[in-house]
Length: 254
Image (cartoon, rainbow, N blue to C red; front, side, top):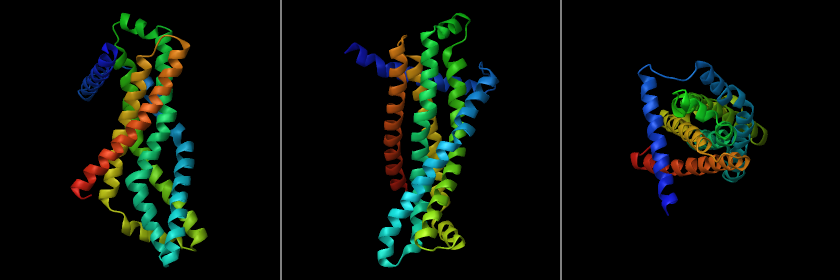
């Protein structure tokens, strides 16, 4: 019972420390190396593009295919562009990209920090007066926070291309007509909602991965458990936050 009580408190304390470190960063004072930030940014952005491209292209294609099968019955195939555009911008691009990054980058953060914990490298940093949150966690969180909105925009474009491929193949839609219908259906509210989701999801994935990696058990099994827990909690958290966003968006009329 005591352990179950301490774990949420430790998580809240960790989140508070990350926020205080982020506040110091905004004031121009940070203690991590720029090289660590650039490496984490590269891992969270450019090196993630292949898997993000494939997954979002397929998701856009699946949405278009399912929509086309139903809409063709009513002679409204052109509205596939509306379906794909709104679904990708509001939900799928942000959620799918966050799930992909949880399994790729979040797991990498957890495994890397858990290995450092096993090798007592974190203790060595503490002895030198460098707190792990300031030196190890913050650059990873900042890198994923910067990368996720950019990946969201790229995922939207990729999903729309996937929908276009199916629309052109099944419905003989011209690319100009497809994109014209898409731009008519989309609004800044849809894009703003998806952009906000991507930013929040990026912070969740980064903080979760770093938390489980930093507090992993100091053995080989601990590294595996930390990686598994980081991925599971990140995906569940993304879905739960998406539900919260849906309720709030409905209340605000977005």
